[in-house]
Image 1 (tube, helix red, strand yellow):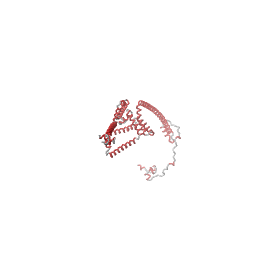
Image 2 (cartoon, helix red, strand yellow; image 1 turned 135 degrees about the vertical axis):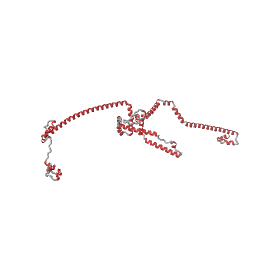
Image 3 (cartoon, helix red, strand yellow; image 1 turned 90 degrees about the vertical axis):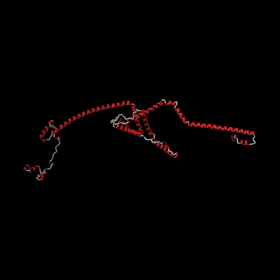
Image 4 (tube, helix red, strand yellow; image 1 turned 120 degrees about the horizontal axis):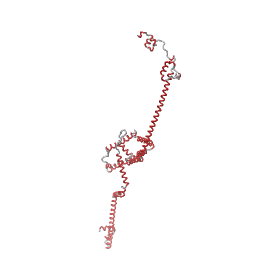
Length: 427
């Protein structure tokens, strides 16, 4: 009854005093006891209700926690259910998805074929120089033998050009670098000061990565082959091993000379890339038409060249005959003129030459025909006339001295020298 008394005292504080009063009657005591019992029952019912509500609330919280914990699992289950649903299966196995899978597989196969085409070609250059395996690679790439691989490569180049034009790639790379390094530095410093351990050390590999020697040698060999490809092709173009290729290179360089002045760097790169990839595509799509037109133009050029050669030969032969005729004619005229000149010179000799010279001249020129009497003395220039004063006077004295005898060239004349000698001097 102590618990009931405690409850009754909490409900009715005056009940305790009444129970201790000796003057209370039995009726009043019975009434107070019943009231206390009723209050105790109500309080007990309230406590039971409170406990029941607490248990229900606890169960609700536990269920909420369970649902919160199982929510990711429910999302995964929902995703699995959606992925395994009939609609998803029909969509994944439908014609569109199958076409995408086939195209992806075909693209992968074409890239494998393109990578496998890097083999040494069977033919060589005109001077027996071995070619590189990049000759076959670039030929297969630009000839669109693998259209998907070539198309993806072309689109990649175009995207790279536009990215370099509209995106600050260098700045983004530098920003990413200093961001990563700053985060690593701050995290490592904070870990050292707070927990005394290294964060980067927990993820640091046991050994740092190194490029294998075989991979590095293979890469350097590819770089060497690529450089030699451009060097060999430049020489083949310059030395006109293939005339159409040299003509195309001339056209490209001539157009580039003027386009560089008009287009920016990225525009010129875009134009060059489009020409490099699309011109072979146009040729492959219209090969028969282009080849027939090229053959027709070649035949016309050959015919025109042959006709020019024939006309040149005819004109050359005519010119040679004309020159020969004029040469013979002028030779005859020149011989006749030379003969007439000789006759004039021989017949118009001065009268002082005597009849002997005239007879001799006539005899010697008898073969040239009769003497031409039409030539006069006035046809020849006058002979120079010399005066006696123009010559030095001879010495007037004889040199009989020894000096004159010893030096006859400087002394008396030869007659005086011979006169001074006696016949005995010659014996």
